[in-house]
Image 1: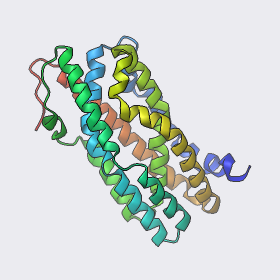
Image 2: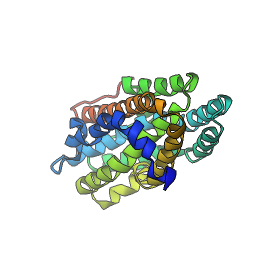
Image 3: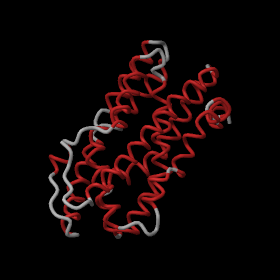
Image 4: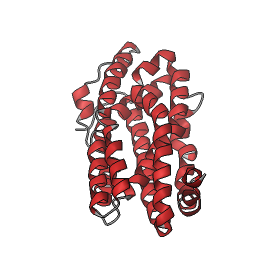
Length: 253
């Protein structure tokens, strides 16, 4: 019983973030991508852009969580600071999964007759507004008087992986065949591992709210905004993937 029930989380936090969470299943761009009749090339183009653009979204995560943990410790939230710093270690190098996936996805793109794609050009694409906002919300949270907002960000983003990840894996396998899972290591790993991470995040958030229930709504605003930003980023990947399918498509520089 006790904290494992996450009663404080349920009472003080979840009601304020439920609208953002609903968007995971309701977002029209993502629903279109997951539709049974989606063209295989559209799914593949999305995966290419997600892997390419996701590198710069993912590489800083270890540092963000570590710095947030250090700030929590400075402000006297010692347990949470330690938990965040420990969790940061599990995020190290995850951008490499995206780079590996990108290489395999490019090979598939060529094999399907769509022509060559240059990895360097894909990786050098300018950030979308959502990508810029994702950096900003992390940096602002870390520098604020609520660096423990990082646990809300982690809760929402990793929970999203457990909901959207399996749906994406199924949709991509349906459109492109079982072997596409070999080039979806980032999505596959997070869909599996983030189940445990989410449970840990929620338990820590519940502990924080047990002592500071007044933080429920402010933390939910941070977590909900981070979730909206990431879903916007996924929509950007859908849009930029669609542009790859246009005749004489060229990558922005």
